[in-house]
Length: 258
Ligand code: GLU
Image (cartoon, rainbow, N blue to C red; front, side, top):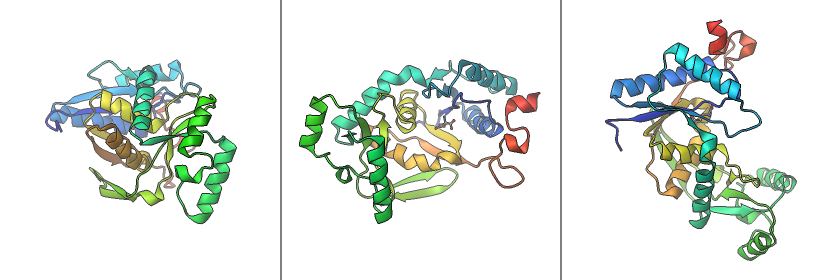
């Protein structure tokens, strides 16, 4: 791993104003890059078309400029990577690391509830009509499907820069969606695909993503890509110990600036 010249990124979703907690995460990335002679990159995670807006994207860019968090390469827009996200999902399928799920949302909700009661994780075998033959027939019939990542047996360990060695038993992880039936990628796939594409060496982000990391580590492995280092930073809390939000008063960079 090229630790001598790191590439880090800040990856806000343009679904609202830049939160001061986000700005703090960006600051860690920025200072780490500056300290190590690396690159500080920005990726606008705008795959959620309904909740994202160009106005919020410009607000975020504006707030970062105001804070002096200068980026070293033009901002990347996650939505531009859609074809690559789909290609990567196809690679997971071809490698036998993902499966096609033809079940409806309601069907899946029922299966999930039942498995939860039995204390079992969601796996392909638990979904009726998902044997190889039936799947092939449903595919041939043109039925829509979502792609699910297949969690293997065992456990995943990563050495978090902040939290230290972190292990999750796979028995506690459900197979999870990587591509929805409308062909849109889910966050965990898009983020890994983009971080690989951008050559990110250190993923420094909020603690709210710690539970996503084992899933992402598994996707890196399935795609045969080098793992970056991960570092999860604490959230900024209000005086009541809850995550700082508008309820506490100012929570966005915009509000502090005003
Ligand atoms: N877009 C995500 C967020 O705003 C960040 C994803 C990441 O840093 O991996 O929470």
